Image 1 (cartoon, rainbow over the protein chains, first blue to last red):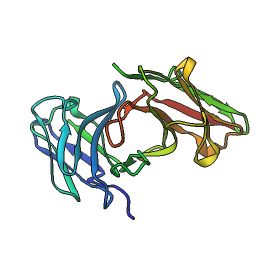
Image 2: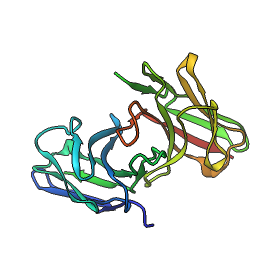
Image 3: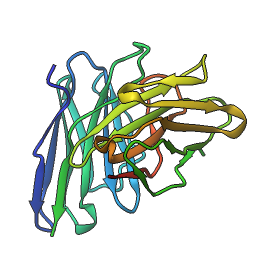
Length: 115
Length: 114
């Protein structure tokens, strides 16, 4: 298995631009998580899905952030408009459902820089 | 609210020396506990996990962790550190059942000196 795939790995954009981050979870995993990592706040959960349905989006910073999961093999995190304070590493993780492992498998992350 | 505290931001250990990274959690019941490692530029990899049973759990790469309910701790240990162990280590708590969010500590950066 290729693991969790994220694209792009690096993104540099100007303030005000729209940014779309992409994630392909591990096949067969029913949970998908989006995290943000910064030096100041560490790892924060933004949103997670179960069977493509958003379960908890309380970590989404504000309306500029949105996430979708149109099918079991793809999810996007969109920031519109982007701001410099959105600069961070964004991780996607997936997890199997009730398999007993409770393990989240992380992708390599997308490093976002907003100038 | 549930929280995870890793009191040490940065630790330096000599190669071959033993290692202990501290983790304390705040939660009413016994949560599911995890240790992850993050190498530079990489995602997080699970080292080990505790759900129930034996309070000493073994993980990958020679790591182990001990759950102590009385101290609300889940410290990570390794008897002999290798230079390749230099990374950032995260303790995490899953206060709910399978598949729901993890709460991460702020992480401890491990440096290994020769």
